[in-house]
Length: 597
Image (cartoon, rainbow, N blue to C red; front, side, top):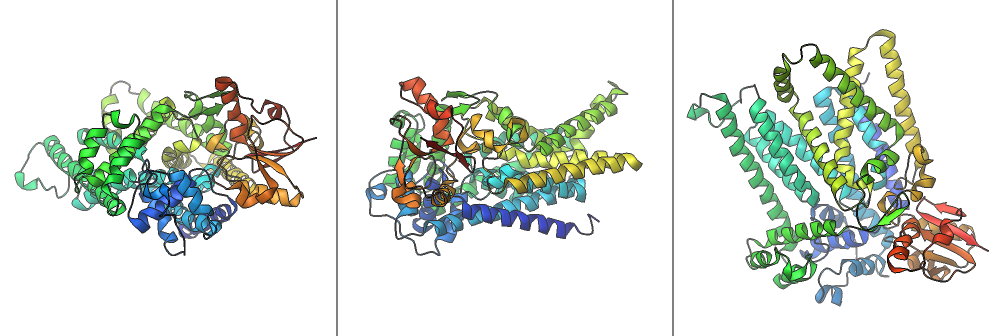
């Protein structure tokens, strides 16, 4: 049945995902990062100028900016934020999104729509890749885990880099592993193109370089099948290991050349009208440490040469983002607040943010894999251990590459100094879905009779649980938490920022204020929405160090919890008096409403 109707099932899942994503996109206000990303994408495409938001690569912002070219929009190109200053991205964003001449909701929806389409394409590739590797059932299971993950649905309609880096990393891995098995010129070129696209999505994709290099070395050493149509055939290299080494070394060099050619072409398309002095201004003002940064002098020299100018802009962003990572970010985590990092942050956030059915499948997968590894190797250990290792790497190089990437990316995230959201783990999630589907289906094929029926029923129940939980969470996906902490209503008590509160619920606050006939409400809002744009004169802009008054309060979860940091470091008043109260209402899990009498 699955094989016969697989196309219909995939289409239905993706259409459901599309409907959910469009509905959520229409209901969400601008989140914090979109204030910088949306106007940046618009100006890249319209003006060929990269002065705004240079700390992130352009491809996703370009995608968001293309539909906006067909709208009748105004941008403040005559203001100082454009003519004099460097990277006034936040001021430019507020002006662009909320100036009276522009329709805010139209801008938000059409800039988000290409990201939604990219998320659908990622879902299709996850299905296709898992099906090619492990069969139709695995493909459908992997797609279901992806499409009904509330965390994916919470982010796949925003103009940010998180879904994009996940998508382009999967595309790059897909073609790279195909290249490994069939290293002809077509696959070599495609592997280079999509490796380039991944670097143009987010700078953390730099981690693909060591993973691809290590995977390549492993496969050179362990590949047993002869290379078909090797360009070295005419050289008559008799030793197979030497033929493999030479062939893969040359073709991998081609992949790297194509990758950086892609980076050059896309950055050139985004900077060809940008004045050179603006690039120099970015180098002097935006790099961590300014002119004292070790990269400053080389970048100035690159900017003066037309052929190197696009790469200068690329490396400006590269050094900016890693300077920011080193600087850290104010983080609330399980009652503690710091501008440094917690090593347990990502493991614990993963455990409270991922749906319980997915976690059950994940831990079952680990148990299944461990069981069969031990079963297949302990009987003749250590007699055939080396033979088994060689055979595994030869036959399972794709899974090896996935596991290496998951391990490295998780390690870098855990040991890094930027704890601002589960979204930073998105690049590993598609690989996790695929590997889960492999082991679940593998065990299913080994079972017989009633045992298989019971096993199938358990998997069906877990999938129904996942789908039902996702349906009931609509449309508050960004603030989703599983039952281990009591669900989404308690999420803000454990973590904040993009785990819960990125400003997405401001339009819903407007609806709450109108329905409850509230004349005045004190608002301390974290996000990309304009409070006055939505609430007008009903809103009183508020902060934690203002004196307490009677009346209505709407406080973003991030400001509620992060105010503790400023109390500790600066002695300023915080929201302790509100944290001790149960909120009157929660708007989407991210804005807490209090009524003080």
